[in-house]
Image 1: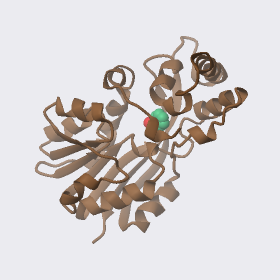
Image 2: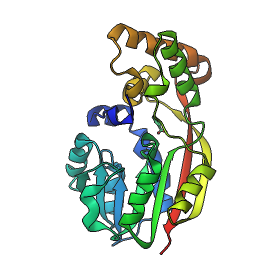
Image 3: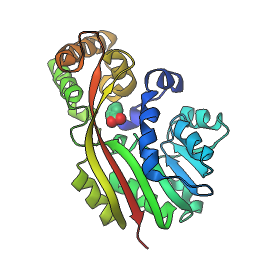
Length: 256
Ligand code: BEZ
C-alpha cells in the first residue's frame, strides 16, 4: 500500500479538509500571481486556489492525479487535466511555457521528489518560479508515531504503508539546486492546525494508505488506539483536536 492508493472524495474533502486550501492562501502570497501569467497548479485538488489564481488574472491550468478533483475544478469553469506529477507525460507539449508552477499540500504524497522537480523544471520557462508548500520534517509526528505503534500492536507492518515524504529544508533545497533551481526562500515552521472534527475523521480522510484493506473491526480498533495514544497531546478539554503540522514553504527560480 502506498500513496498511490490514497483516494479522495471531493465532497468529503470540502467538508473535512477545507482548511487545506484556506491555509494555502499564505503560500499564494509567496507566489505573487500577476495578471496574464501562465501558471500551473500542481495538485489542484478541488480547484479553490486555482480559482483564486484565475481571479488574479492568471491563465491557470489545474493538474491532479484524481479524476474527481479534476472534475470539481472544471466545474468551477477552470481548465484542468488529469496527470501524475511523477510523469506529466500529457503536458509535454507545454514544455517551457509556464511562468510559474504552484503546489500546495501535495508534494508530501510523492516520495519520488526528484522526478517531480525535474518535470516542473521542464514545464517552466527560464526564470520561471516554482512556489509551494508541503509537510516538512517532523510533520504530524505524534499521529504518525501512533499509527505505527497501533498497527504494530495488530501485527501489521506500518512502514510498508507509510510513504509520506516530509523533507528537511536542507534536503529539499539541495534537491531543487541539483535540478537547476536557485532557491530564493525556504523555511520549515510548525503550524499546529485545529481540526474541524475528531481525529478519527482526519484519519479516514488522510491516512487511507495505513487503514485501507484492514478488516472493519481491526480498522476501528486501530483508529481508536491512535486517538487514545494521541489525545493527551492533541485534544483539549473541549474535545478540539489540533494536529502537529510542520510546513516546508519554498520559492525557487529556474536557472537558464
Ligand atoms: C499535510 O502535511 O498536509 C499532510 C500530510 C500527510 C497527511 C495529511 C496531511
